[in-house]
Image (tube, rainbow, N blue to C red; front, side, top):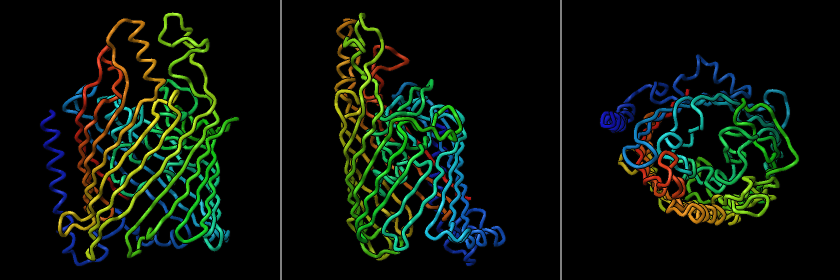
Length: 456
């Protein structure tokens, strides 16, 4: 079964490499392989909608992953996502100058690779959820921009990973951490209490009511700040509760940008520095409310509640070489730190390189390699050491998790991409206990995957 699955992945990946070459010979400029979307212009209806300020989108993402070695169990999984978006130019629709609106909702089906097979903290796929099926509202906001584009305000249900802590190069990778990284994903609140006991923050798959403000003092400088509710929308519900409590999550980011426009001829450059603060309460991983170690037989089992948490971070992403034919090499580096004693991850760094057009004649394809490292905070480490001491057993102590990923994005058509992918996970679960084999660590895991994305 595993051999057949891997062979199928390889065959599909290799076969797609010849499709655009055939498409380039097509004479009709509006043929299947040249159009931007699979379903085309709907006999002119799509163009008319856009002319009147309505842009609708539907994207399908399907992916298969196999874990032939390591992790908590071996085997293959399949999952998919349908993402529906709507963008509205309210100046065209209603004469509201500088006004736009956006809505997005998704449906995810299937079994994800991390929760089912690998057991790691930095999820193999950015699509994966912790349940097999869910349909929910993600974002819903209104934005007002100044006439000279020097500032804008966005209000509604927002997802901070749309605009903050982003790298264009790392976004080509599939692992969750290369978009919304482990500092946020492992440390922040995961919505109202639920049986999944999740962390996440106001990022996919959880939107949160809030406001985002952006100032552009010059062509190359942008300053973004957002404030949202501390508790994102409940994972157990459909994402439309718009819940606001007394605590908030705040994030701010200063950006220096060059050649970011699609038609820019120079080498793109992006440097960013940011910070966030969450005023909510967070469970201490080491001590209970009486000051006893949670691992002690004398503990009452109720963690101390810490007031607030924060992080500071930086991002660098730049193109270091590009050719007249469209080939380019870009590099990225991101990192950040958080309080050591009560955050699961207290330090994080990732970096890598992307090569656009590495195969001659396929200048739109991208080969990307990335490495991510997440360090376990002292609170979690001290708890594990106490478990050893009280139980007088050589049980695992969490230390770090590292992910290496190699991905090739094959652009079969403007509306279709196929991405063969391989990841190697060192110390899954930060080197902690294997839930299926208590007292042992999770073995380092190898994961092979294939994702296909179709824009309708």
